[in-house]
Length: 310
Image 1 (cartoon, rainbow, N blue to C red):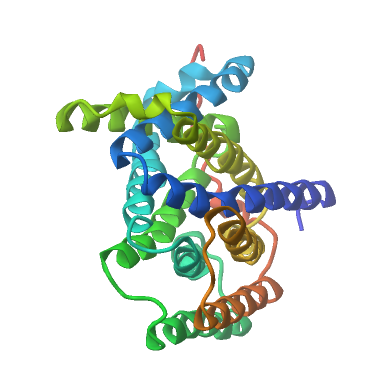
Image 2 (cartoon, rainbow, N blue to C red):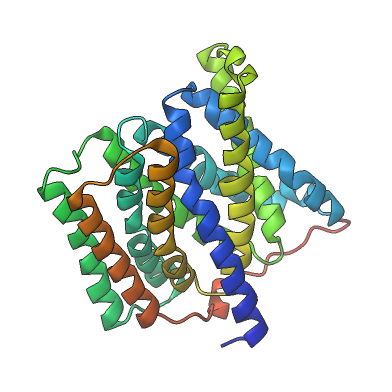
């Protein structure tokens, strides 16, 4: 283990990320039924990027986000972690309830385990292999009982964790020298530029929607809580702990909180099969935690040169 301080701070940041992430399916589901998808994606990415600017400027490192050694990788990172996921989430949650969406997102630790093993050299333990089968079985139970229909929305949501995890792998190769604040600003800053271009191509959206408090508030809340705060805490956590272990630590709390939020704020009700699936999925993820190693392997870090004068 690298140090007790890294472990404690990384765990604390992971818990902050958990609470933030639990808000994402509920806020997105609410907005998906009321706001034009591209407008929602563009505004949330732009607000998230702007909220990070004071911190990045205070660090005196804004120019690094467009520096040649990092620019291409940051664009790829944003396309995976912001553009692709934002579109898939709002597309999927227009067709799938927040509770069902939460269940589908539980495949993230599996993607994390595979990517961490293939690309970062983190070897899964027998316990983690069994836990993976439990998580897949939980989703199969819900599909088999007919509580969740396999449609394009569900398929899109299954792709979200894979894009998240691919973007995390890119992020790990850039931290250090880039900081969690820089990574968060780049993720949503480049995402805002891409969505701005897509809006220009698609035609003028109905900007009047943003003048309604019940619509602008969830946009700002999504941008600040799960996007900016959640991403900042997440990158802080995985810069201190292993990717697969941090993912496994965060994921169990997300479905419990998300389902609670969906019931409280959206009036949704979980079906019996969905609850069974969620319980099994959480049990599988807990097994991943117990079978994993919290240390972040130093081989994950790629030292990249800092451009002269920056």
